[in-house]
Length: 171
Image (cartoon, rainbow, N blue to C red):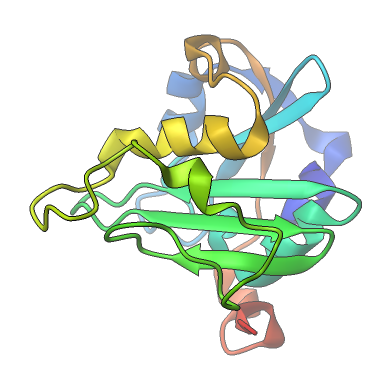
């Protein structure tokens, strides 16, 4: 998984979330990713960075399986990303129900969003309820321990390397 993020699996170290956060450069050009497992679920936590939100990285992470990603913005601009076996299925800032990129895509089940927010209320936003959506989609419980246990952590390359490349292509 670390290699699919662009990191070097040979230069990892075990760090907790606060230590990962403290390593982030003030420029925000690159960051660190921590990877852990719970049963057969592999999860990644990226602080401050957004490598996992690059469509090409999402496609790579999902090869041979599925990848659900969340990006929480400091100003409330939260994003949902979902890829299946190398194909980007969802990539949006949700305001209401989350929709697949291609209408009717059977890899996205609209019932995953059911009863999580009132989509008829324009003042209601997803916020942390996106973790509930992640649980529905991936059929796993997001645990507090994911954010406090030591994670195998690697430095990621500067995202400038993928600017204006096909890594950002969205079907």
